[in-house]
Length: 290
Image (spheres, rainbow, N blue to C red):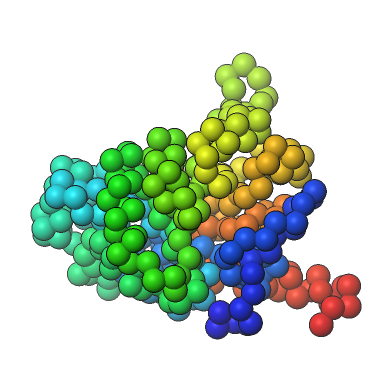
């Protein structure tokens, strides 16, 4: 990394020490991942946003990907282009050429005019050595074989890859096709209609991870659900990897840092990174570490 020596990515959980083959952040184990790029400042899921994320010293970037009608993998969050391009075209029913007739930057600010919808390969090419590329799959499991083929052609071992998806079948298919690549299932928590609890509960999360054969879980950063008892239970049920999204509050970032989240996904990577580095340095000073 540009910010320090190359090391393994270490996470200390309440009941276990987990060592993963990712690079450590100066923020005491947390990877700071730019959500759809540096999307607070630049138009989401564009090359401009990803390049800005690297300028802001992100440890990784996260982008959303769909399969087009002509089997190209493109980076966009919504199933259609209305919100970011101003014209409605269904992504999975359109060709790459049709999608590139539109413009995806001006909705954020006129200075971003001219941004095109990027392909997976184009986003990949922005990633510096030893950094992390988080690929969220929005299409169903039919995207998995094409993604596997493309990653085989691209992967030269210089960057890290984490695949994530809300779709259980997609996550499982990716892990089966790419066993050496880390995969996380995504979930968020909804309150039960008849009581104060939320679903899925911690046991369901851990059981889902085991059933799908994936490596961990990415969770919406809901403090009313995720606490020390929750993360301890995950660890005890052999779900030892978790990351949280989308965290733009410094207070929330510090909270999930103390719980041992392996990654914090944020629209504001520079803002969150600065705060967590400051917290880590103060903690070291308190215990007399250099």
